[in-house]
Amino acid sequence: MITNNEQNNNPTFTNEVLLPQHFNFSLQDIRKMKEPEYKNYIEEVRLSLLELINKKCPPFGVRLSEKEIIENMKVLNTENGITVILPDRKSRYIFSCDIKNENLSLQYKSHHTQGINHWFFQIWETETWQGKSPLALFHNADTFFKNMNAIIRKGKFKLLERKPNATITDCIDLLKITNGSKPAYNFPCSVAKWIYLNSAERLTSELEDFYIFDPCMGFGGRLGGALASCNHSPLNNRTVHYYGTDVNTSIHQQYKKVENYWKQHISQPLKFSMYNSLVPAENIFEDSVFTLMEGKFHVALTSCPYFNCEQYSKDPDQSYIKYPLYDQGGENSWKLGFLKRMIENTYRLLRDNGEFWLNIADINSNKNLFKNPIISLESDAKRFAIEAGFTHVITYNMVMPDINAQPQNQVEEVINHKITRDNKIVRQGKKMKFEPIFVFKKLRRNT
Image 1 (cartoon, rainbow, N blue to C red):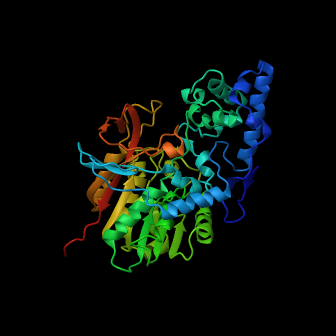
Image 2 (cartoon, rainbow, N blue to C red):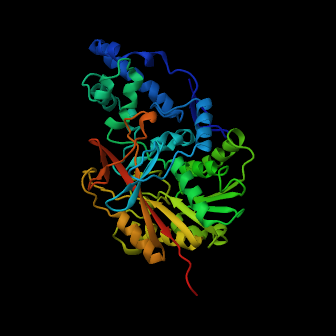
Image 3 (cartoon, one colour):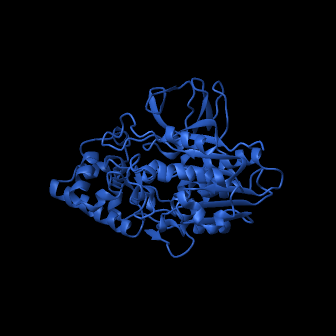
């Protein structure tokens, strides 16, 4: 039974007991079914999953019980999970140096974010620029059957064939790949936690409150990192203030629910305060609270929209709706109307010597998504940051998780690797995509 908890601070969805009985069928049993029975069974599965979706519960195997969610968040709260190493040393969780360009590569324990995700069903509703979300195929019987048949009878995935006890649930989990879409990426809590603690060590004096700004709050990954940083040195004896904004009205109340739940189940007492706005980042000073906070923040960390690559909601203030053209329309283009102004406003909000950590990557907005990028978000962001007054300090390359891997296999050492032209690290023949995190500093100006 899947539970839905929208009316309180609890996670929006949890998985407390097993799914309906027909979800226990093995892959071998399903393959033995005659054609009419087989088609009827697949449709029965689709309708059951559609019922889950209508209850705001994702159909894929991403649901934890409430006990597991609490344990997941407690691990995030206590573990560090990130260490800085040199390329000739070994560590389970790594920042490894890339000798070629002297940047750093980070791979993280992505399942630290699983608990936080349970407050944000909207991750699965997010559409790509093509207008598809991971949930789209569940609304079309023919499309659903075609994709399930490719997995079950055509052996599309070798990893499934190697699993002797595979069930229909394993097949359902693979639908997020066959649909040509994938869930929205949630910034990893453990990376955010590391960044906050790393920055606080260098940017604050003893017992000074720590101020964080997030111009695109998203699905709570950076909020989770902020909460988890509170009880670790050097922040354990001071208050962490997390300020942010996001125009997605459907998730606005979820941030406070996460904070309240954390204080109730994970960490008490907690020296933490949060303010979240609905004012667009490019117009943030229209919110009087932020007018009063100019020059107050120690660090800003965000992963802003990649133009129209992920379309989080239909709210009119979403940047892809307000600015539908990337570089046409002058001040009404996306790169000038949103990206440039968001960076400039972040500069104004930071104090002298404050840092802006920006996760952004080049994209291709045509149908050939995996070919060379044609929209240079990275170079435009760096140029706008320097024009605003920032100094580019360093770039971290964040290795993305393998969508096919189990959580315990997500973390690998990426040592003695090489970098491909399409932003992938290659190690032992395996490619792992990475995205840059640019670090900019607002240097104190001589007067």
